Image (cartoon, rainbow, N blue to C red; front, top):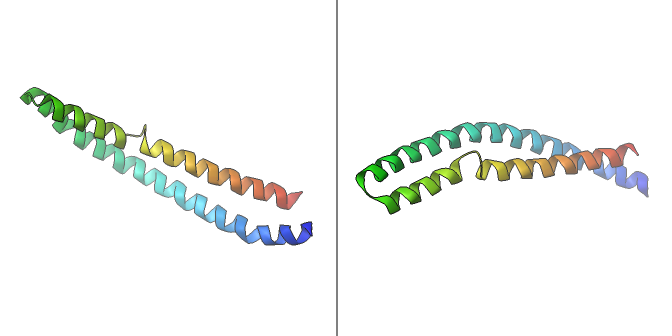
Length: 96
């Protein structure tokens, strides 16, 4: 029975390996793009502060922070790490 499960786990591990590699590539690209987007949102926020529109400036700074590498990309890194952990667990199961 265990042998059958190990045989069935092989394609799942292969698919997970491909998905994790693809997600890591997309994560690298998105970090660059979202970093640029956060800067492009933060610059008008600074001008809004200088123009006296404080509320709009605070909102733009909050949106820029969401797009910065501290929030959305960090969550994506966590999810890719969980997928990588599942892949490693399947590999250990197949080798045991």
